[in-house]
Length: 326
Image (cartoon, rainbow, N blue to C red; front, side):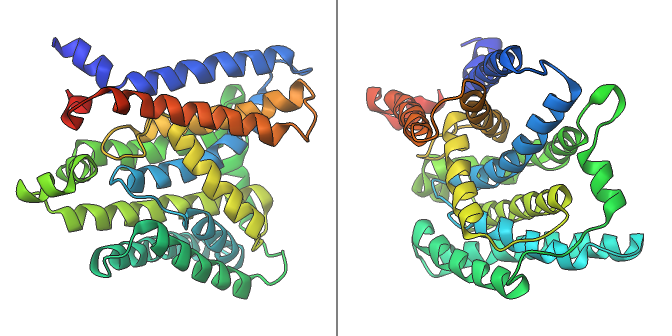
């Protein structure tokens, strides 16, 4: 297989997700009363970035053939924490930012340690830890409220030159700083190897425990970034179980729509981002076309079922799982 054909095959699902998003967003703006305006793009970007960060968080764990049902509660916990400590002078705000991100890292590390050393299934582990994280969020914010550094929030959620959404640039910067080096590093290759076949990776000398542990740590980090952005958007914190559950399930949906295999070992966080943008655009399209709210959950469920089936179809066709990576 020539180099360009290999590259295309490797990124096919990401390119497809990007194409689907562009087509859907074009349909959305064409039917929106404000059209393709800076305000419409900013609103869509702000909603999409939140889910995109959670989708990337989920991707790290899914690549190891696991699943993290605590990303939503880490997201809410860090939102509540940020509404307490990301305030005051620039120095205090900076320390608050580090504290929120460190909290996400610690939550992810706890998940990873229990999965690896406790030898529990990821789904069971993250359900249990997610309940604990949500309890901490309730302790921090029994009632909605709080504040955040307004200058920083405005800078990260407003519009830049030409109406470009600042939140979108934040997402791109984070991906360049974290995902690109990760994907090209030995750690990134180890995570993909573990998801492909943990036994084979171990027999090949891959540090499987380190790879899985770091996948959960990075998942917690990105969930905390999402919590920070939520605080910047809302200027408050709220321990909402509905938001925690919704964002957790939607992050899984975004991963699937973005072409990341739930069997592990294949896919990209970039694809998951486009999956998140697709999912948000589907909701926007339902609003624009005024679909009865009673039918919207059914429609979304059908879309996700089709996406899961399409993602699994290729796996049913092959006899040797290594063919997925050829």
